[in-house]
Image (cartoon, rainbow, N blue to C red; front, side):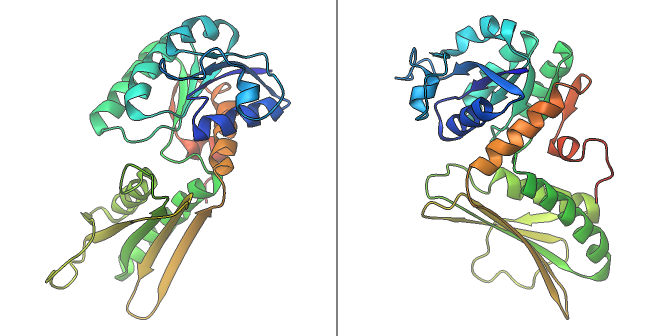
Amino acid sequence: MIGVIVIGATGRMGRRVCRMVLEDDEMELVGAVASPSSPHLGRDIGLIIGQEKAGVEVAPPSAIPNLAEEADVAIDFTVREAALENIPVAAKAGLDLVVGTTGFSEEELDRLKRTILEAEVSAVISPNMSLGVNLLFELTRQLARVLGENGFDFEIVEVHHRNKVDAPSGTALKLASIIEEELGRGKRVFGREGETGPREDDEIGVFAVRGGEVVGDHTVMALGEYERIEIKHQALSRDAFAKGALVAAKFVVEAPPGVYDMRDALFRGSKAP
């Protein structure tokens, strides 16, 4: 059995991850961590997520080192500020990590990676844990590789719920970086307005739409002179991200120390498309 600590256990994503861990025959939920100011501290996580008692009380982040004694991996779905504090603590306690939190700067992400490598643990860090989105990353790579040499323009549109606090999404930015990598160039344009003039060849448009309760839609467009290709992924439930987090957790506990992404977890050494 894989012992799991969920950091951010009482949030929207954390609750889904807790439920899936409790339902998984290969996993055991040994810790549920929430903010020190959470009103749920001390309550059984099973009751919080609408199930039977799980025998796991919600604890503050200060409990992570003690919880680590019975755990193999920590799954983090919190906010940037909390993750920057909690991930180093979990790594130094010897826990492998799955990090689904987004919003890190490049400097912050590099710092977290150094901490993980120094602790000699394994971690999967991804802006999107969905299996389908990570396949979208690979398809986008092929799209840019093949069509970028043939005069196609690339644009990205993402749609999320009205309460999402960052824009564009981390997934959209990852898609843009993949296109840039394959093209060997790229000038990101975040929205267009007024007399912009003709589109420049190296532009990659990235557009964010917010409204309603949309879980997450991402569309990559390759627009040529005579044809257009669109690749679209729609998340129908946040369970898609929770499912991916469990796949990542099962991968990371078997992986050598190092920092990985969902591409590694998804293909597990097999050849990517």
